[in-house]
Length: 173
Image (tube, rainbow, N blue to C red; front, top):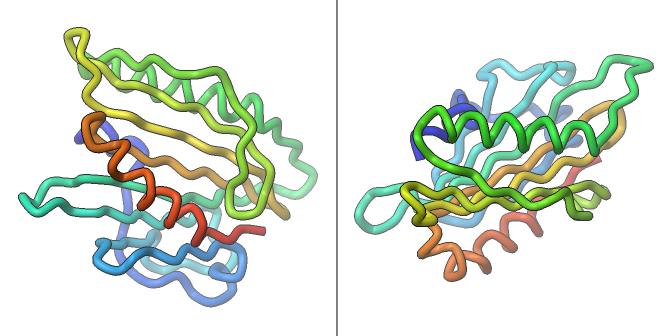
């Protein structure tokens, strides 16, 4: 999953209360969670929380990341354009690493209580799917939010309950 670092560059300290009021994530017990940046202010332009569920062998079994990006006043954002650009970036990033990413068209989705869109991707190498990744985007009050999560294809169905548990613990505004 090293190619996913494009989406998951993070630090490791708690988000202060004003920022938490806009983006709350309740992570299941046993997850390794990091937050960035280290010195988050309520007006920080970008805030990320990343959770990793580690398998018994020490490998990353499931990685989920929630990001809040502040929007400038008067800025109009198209969720459709954002999700399409994120899909293109994901596909290009994997292609540079020798993988193929086949992604769905944008689908309606809910993210932390907000209406949004999602794309689902199957990541293949030499014709064999090795990874599944989903990207969701939604707009809130003065902020854009994204959720991305990925897991090995052979474990994805088994991890569906864990994915839904994390998604149910996300609250955005």
